Length: 443
Image (tube, rainbow, N blue to C red):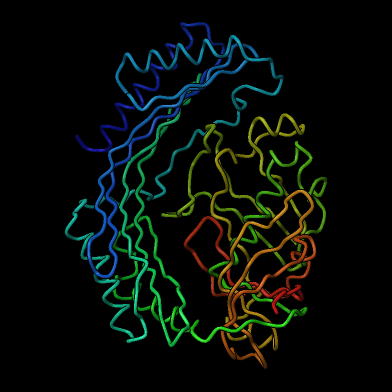
């Protein structure tokens, strides 16, 4: 049976589940059901280490009895198991406390148009091909230089499946999707100095991945570049977040403007709607309907239609990220962010990577971040880091065992430039980011 037929059959199952909930007394209900088939292969030192096939599925149901809510889930998709899950959810709803903000998203916000976003590019789940990819990537890394002496392994994964969402507003919709990735992590040694780094590629289409040879070579080159790393004296300097790690800064921004953080009064950007949070040239656009986008979707996980939005314009915050529940708590309407963001495009200030280094002059280029020292409540930021020391716009030597610190409010306003070396491998697409000054703790 092909995936499109399975998708239609699953829509019928979701509809049946919703009808069960209504018969059992639910005033509203929503359900989502997913099925995924995939393969995952791992190698180490050019030998196969793991080979896994997955064939997973599950259903989650949430029912509302007035303003009381109950949820249940099951991985058993037999009719009896589905009936049991629905009855348990209804039973739970009758015993939970009332919450005036609970319930389905507003009916007028439901998705009505379902264009093909080209998220599904099926391929045969061939274990021989997958094994060849991981072995080739490691071989490519080891062939680069004799100083590549060890490996933390290579991994390849391919996943294809679909998700169906439905609710008692009458919406039942779903779409198939696919995702492929390949990564390689190697270790270099020179004398007593050992360093590790990695490279990876990810795409909706297997044919658009970087080659295994390229991934292995990049992993080796990045790892070799870290040999001879030094510590730095404690200082305050400009910092460039390389595009490999720059999107993490915007992930903290996402947390700070998400409805859940805001209605709990646990965000440093509380009451900042319409206020300046970035330099005036800064712009962030959300494009949920990009063809083949890794975070593309016609509707969010509550069925709310997604739409193009300018999140930051002229440096000013234009929108909070709201689910139906957080929107009601804050006195707004949901804007389609149940389940996360959808393809953020961060505007570049025009400089390429070399021009960004030249503009910084002397400072720190960060290529790796460690630890979780970020406080969204007050914006304090402190993380372990590694990267390169830069003088006169040129990389001088690698550095490690340092900590960089600041406050996210100051860091966002202190962004001097964003490069055009955009990394498209995630939900946030941004180039490298130059910040005017941060505290660097070293020796």
